[in-house]
Image (cartoon, rainbow, N blue to C red; front, side, top):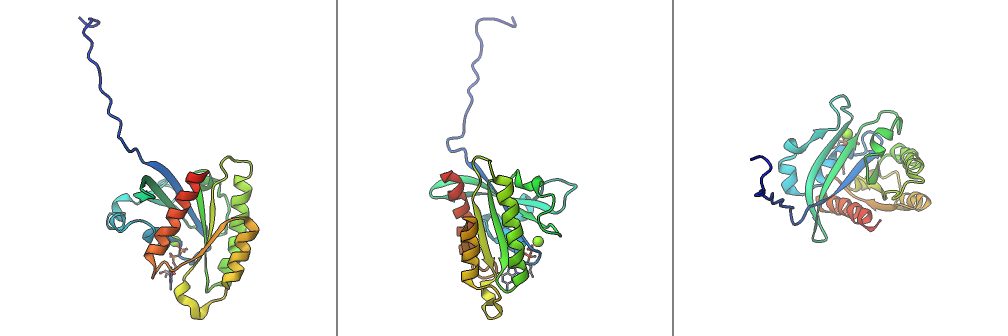
Length: 196
Ligand code: GDP
Ligand code: MG
């Protein structure tokens, strides 16, 4: 009988530690090191499988791709997705990825003044986009390539001043030399998202 009394009870197993998710988008001028940062930001374990987890957001938009990795930040698991962008002309038509992001990392190269000046445009675009949104989403200004100290064109004070103007966090790092610091910055973004 189809509707007999003896119904079987489905036992639904819910994973004990369902990781929350955190979407981070990396913005900035060409050559500032976004793609390198995306590659080193995740755990070494994730790096070894990066070719398996790299995903293009849409087959039709090769300028957007993500890496995903299950990270542990402050003993709490979190699925971190990091999107690399490659807009040629600054933040044009950026709604397509701003809406996806929980946090923003805006990168320049300390040895390239022009890349620093481009950051202001990205900061304005992100600020404008997230105005009125709840939560607004943390923003990190990141000076990359500190290993190029000899060729520095942007002082640390300039970076800090720009960050202060936009009320965002500020770090300097080297995507080439300091993997652990890079990872810490992405973890800091996760912490900020959790605080909201
Ligand atoms: P994108 O255009 O922002 O994605 O920049 P890429 O990630 O392609 O980096 C541009 C160039 O800068 C590449 O040759 C990278 O290897 C180099 N690069 C990236 N990060 C660093 C860094 O921390 N130090 C140095 N010296 N070079 C870097
Ligand atoms: Mg790139």
